[in-house]
Image (cartoon, rainbow, N blue to C red; front, side, top):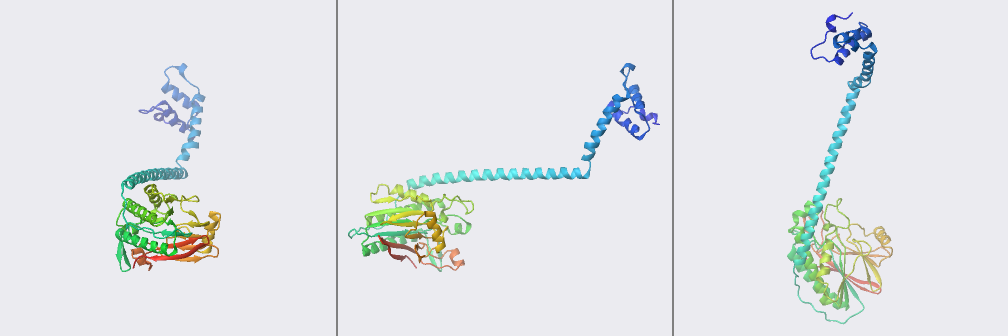
Length: 401
């Protein structure tokens, strides 16, 4: 039996809440569905014609009870709570990942915008910059069947140091280029060379590819580029006064990357802007021409007296027979020789069928990196005399210390 007080409507209780409360007595066996129906009809219906039979109350309650047991009771279980917590954690992780991706995308866009702005400013600076003057040099011999290769590698303009191994800055770079021109004229006169091929082998600026380099840089990258562009264009112009014809080819180096190694794009090298500047500055000079790279922006190909030569900086290539063979395979032919820089000292190697000519650095040794790694090297560049038979001789031109 159910206490009569339990049959009374409680304050604020709705009809559905009343039925749900009483059905628990039915489940316990203290009340029948007919008795529940009588209680509901008595307390909630004014007229008898409004009374419902027991099924009108039983079926909805049983459906609600089944739904409760199937859904809500599981939601209260420990396993379901853990599942909800796991889903919540996954949602939070997804939100964090989305936020990180959005931040990375914004940083990438901002970086691209800064690069574009710097390049626009650089182009303006290069267009407005003047020409550096070297001592006037005039040719004094007859034309012959020989050509000269003049290497210009690893100038590292912008770097400045003064140590036990040596000193370097932009003024010293200009002095060494002047000395280099004098040596070129002497060698050209000795071999009665008629024309010249200027091989720019990369790393013409110090760049800012990592913090160690930034510390030894005297100039920012924009200033480095404008200075290097002026020096090289003037150097090339003076070559045009020595030789009957000057052809220039250029490849980019690792120090002219726009970003860190892992983030830098293959074709984005600031050395290419220097080559662009030289082409524009000397476009009016009749005996000057520029040889475009047809294989890759980092691989130059030049034909001299019927012989093919390849140019690379050296950061992607090794000078052993395997590295040279891989480069030849990429080019699709066996060159007479491969010219490179990067290692900052002159060297010659013969891999059997292909020679390797490695040019030095205008800066030489003396910065923190070379001291800490016990690297020595005198400031130098390289000159070769070529004929239809190939390379006749090689001159490592020492320019200081």
